[in-house]
Amino acid sequence: MGARGQRRGGRHTPAANGSKWIRRDKRLAIYLRDGLTCTYCTRFYPHIELQLDHYARVEDGGTNEATNLLTVCRSCNSAKTNLTIRQWYGALRRRGDCSTAVGRRARAWKARCLTEHRERAKELLMAHGTMVAALAVHIVDRQRKFGPEENP
Image (tube, rainbow, N blue to C red; front, side):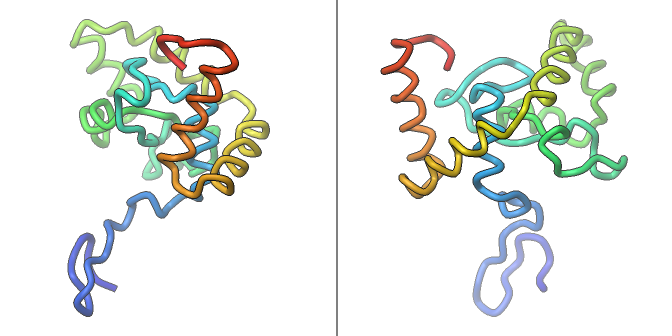
């Protein structure tokens, strides 16, 4: 197998840890569990690109279980790089952000039950095929049910 992001046999191989390390329905279920909102900055989809971050790094024994994964935006995930969660909270404090609120939010969100969100994610993906279409339909459904809101 080729190195990360290199060509092999005339094809471009994806980065080793791209979106393929987790099933689409689990990824979408975690996004739904976290309200399509970045755990760190509280900005929300569609104004951000959603990604997942490990609460406890894999290098430190963290797993790919839903209880160790958080929805984050690309900007926060890039800024956090490979810092531990404690190092990241320290960086947030130095930036003037309230790391206590971020920590509380992260612990509460990752502890939420994924079951109902997993069923909804599977249903959306089966009906609409792509992650983007599934997210769009979810947002429209919420707006119909609850009316337009600032943060889904």
